[in-house]
Length: 127
Image (cartoon, rainbow, N blue to C red; front, top):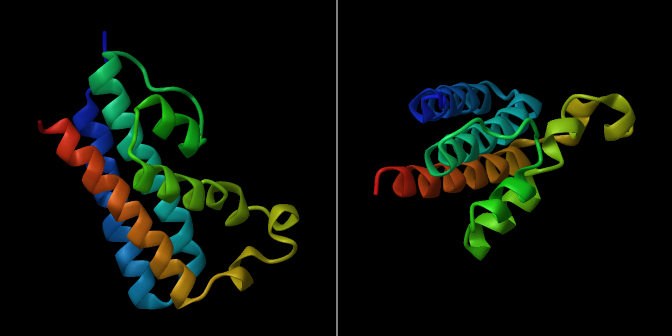
Protein backbone atom coordinates (compact mmCIF):
# COMPACT_ATOMS: atom_id res chain seq x y z
CA UNK A 1 0.00 0.00 0.00
CA UNK A 2 1.37 3.39 -0.97
CA UNK A 3 2.08 6.01 1.62
CA UNK A 4 0.07 9.22 1.67
CA UNK A 5 2.07 11.90 -0.09
CA UNK A 6 0.02 14.52 1.75
CA UNK A 7 1.71 13.59 5.03
CA UNK A 8 5.11 14.34 3.50
CA UNK A 9 3.95 17.66 2.09
CA UNK A 10 2.42 18.59 5.45
CA UNK A 11 5.76 17.74 7.08
CA UNK A 12 7.53 20.04 4.62
CA UNK A 13 5.09 22.85 5.44
CA UNK A 14 5.68 22.36 9.17
CA UNK A 15 9.45 22.39 8.69
CA UNK A 16 9.10 25.59 6.66
CA UNK A 17 7.37 27.22 9.64
CA UNK A 18 10.17 25.97 11.88
CA UNK A 19 12.81 27.35 9.52
CA UNK A 20 11.13 30.75 9.35
CA UNK A 21 10.92 30.87 13.14
CA UNK A 22 14.57 29.86 13.43
CA UNK A 23 15.54 32.59 10.95
CA UNK A 24 13.68 35.20 12.99
CA UNK A 25 15.41 33.92 16.15
CA UNK A 26 18.87 34.00 14.56
CA UNK A 27 19.28 30.21 14.67
CA UNK A 28 20.93 30.07 11.26
CA UNK A 29 22.34 26.55 11.48
CA UNK A 30 18.83 25.25 12.13
CA UNK A 31 17.46 27.23 9.18
CA UNK A 32 19.99 25.51 6.93
CA UNK A 33 19.17 22.08 8.38
CA UNK A 34 15.41 22.60 8.06
CA UNK A 35 15.90 23.86 4.51
CA UNK A 36 17.36 20.52 3.50
CA UNK A 37 14.51 18.73 5.28
CA UNK A 38 11.88 20.86 3.51
CA UNK A 39 13.28 19.92 0.12
CA UNK A 40 13.64 16.26 1.08
CA UNK A 41 10.06 15.94 2.33
CA UNK A 42 8.76 17.80 -0.74
CA UNK A 43 10.61 15.51 -3.13
CA UNK A 44 9.45 12.43 -1.24
CA UNK A 45 5.83 13.58 -1.44
CA UNK A 46 6.14 13.92 -5.19
CA UNK A 47 7.97 10.60 -5.45
CA UNK A 48 5.13 8.80 -3.63
CA UNK A 49 2.51 10.40 -5.86
CA UNK A 50 4.32 9.62 -9.09
CA UNK A 51 5.73 6.19 -8.22
CA UNK A 52 2.72 5.14 -6.12
CA UNK A 53 5.05 3.62 -3.57
CA UNK A 54 7.58 4.20 -0.88
CA UNK A 55 10.05 7.06 -1.28
CA UNK A 56 13.73 6.18 -1.37
CA UNK A 57 15.60 5.95 1.92
CA UNK A 58 18.07 8.63 1.02
CA UNK A 59 18.90 12.21 1.87
CA UNK A 60 20.41 12.85 -1.57
CA UNK A 61 18.35 15.70 -3.01
CA UNK A 62 20.15 15.66 -6.35
CA UNK A 63 19.34 12.01 -6.99
CA UNK A 64 15.69 12.59 -6.12
CA UNK A 65 15.45 15.74 -8.26
CA UNK A 66 17.00 13.96 -11.24
CA UNK A 67 14.65 11.00 -10.85
CA UNK A 68 11.69 13.38 -10.75
CA UNK A 69 12.86 15.16 -13.93
CA UNK A 70 13.18 18.45 -12.11
CA UNK A 71 13.92 21.53 -14.22
CA UNK A 72 17.36 23.10 -14.08
CA UNK A 73 16.51 25.71 -11.43
CA UNK A 74 15.26 22.98 -9.09
CA UNK A 75 18.38 20.90 -9.75
CA UNK A 76 20.49 23.94 -8.84
CA UNK A 77 18.55 24.36 -5.59
CA UNK A 78 18.94 20.63 -4.84
CA UNK A 79 22.71 20.84 -5.44
CA UNK A 80 22.99 23.85 -3.12
CA UNK A 81 20.90 22.25 -0.38
CA UNK A 82 22.30 18.72 -0.64
CA UNK A 83 25.37 19.13 1.60
CA UNK A 84 23.37 20.79 4.37
CA UNK A 85 22.10 17.47 5.73
CA UNK A 86 25.57 16.57 6.99
CA UNK A 87 27.28 19.94 7.16
CA UNK A 88 24.74 21.30 9.65
CA UNK A 89 25.03 18.32 11.97
CA UNK A 90 28.53 16.87 12.06
CA UNK A 91 31.63 18.74 13.25
CA UNK A 92 33.93 16.56 11.15
CA UNK A 93 32.02 17.52 8.00
CA UNK A 94 31.75 21.17 9.02
CA UNK A 95 35.43 21.51 9.98
CA UNK A 96 34.44 22.43 13.52
CA UNK A 97 31.25 23.67 15.10
CA UNK A 98 28.58 23.64 12.35
CA UNK A 99 26.81 26.65 13.87
CA UNK A 100 29.79 28.87 13.03
CA UNK A 101 29.31 28.25 9.29
CA UNK A 102 25.91 29.91 9.00
CA UNK A 103 24.77 33.50 9.05
CA UNK A 104 21.62 35.33 8.06
CA UNK A 105 22.69 35.57 4.42
CA UNK A 106 23.46 31.91 3.70
CA UNK A 107 20.59 30.71 5.89
CA UNK A 108 18.17 32.93 3.98
CA UNK A 109 19.54 31.61 0.68
CA UNK A 110 19.04 28.05 1.84
CA UNK A 111 15.47 28.73 2.90
CA UNK A 112 14.75 30.44 -0.40
CA UNK A 113 16.00 27.38 -2.29
CA UNK A 114 13.90 25.08 -0.11
CA UNK A 115 10.82 27.21 -0.71
CA UNK A 116 11.47 27.02 -4.45
CA UNK A 117 11.63 23.21 -4.28
CA UNK A 118 8.50 23.10 -2.13
CA UNK A 119 6.56 25.32 -4.54
CA UNK A 120 7.62 23.28 -7.58
CA UNK A 121 6.66 20.00 -5.92
CA UNK A 122 3.37 21.45 -4.66
CA UNK A 123 2.38 22.68 -8.11
CA UNK A 124 3.21 19.33 -9.66
CA UNK A 125 1.36 17.43 -6.93
CA UNK A 126 -1.76 19.48 -7.39
CA UNK A 127 -1.85 19.28 -11.18
